[in-house]
Length: 119
Ligand code: TYC
Image (tube, rainbow, N blue to C red):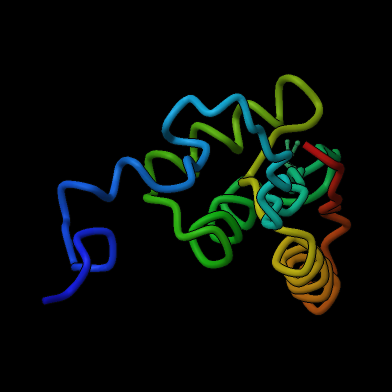
């Protein structure tokens, strides 16, 4: 005969050493989650007096995957307000967009400027 205390008895589990879930009064400082969201960056287009409107629209369609309608809307915003946001990206993507747009503009002899700033 196995002594009563040593037999497997699921209903007796709650009588064992209490853990935190049993309102034991024991508390453990849990560590903060390790993951952090990366910083985000706005990519901006700046207005100038020389770049053709149609070129700016083409840039927005090509490098920021905008519809023609959205690209015209953003281009006109930049034209009237001086600057506008083309998109928000992580640092490396934003840097790549800025370089691509500025290289493309220069290769077409346009002064169009693309920059970035932390969102
Ligand atoms: N201002 C330019 C013009 O009148 C058009 C333009 C719009 C240029 C947006 C740059 O980011 C820009 N031709």
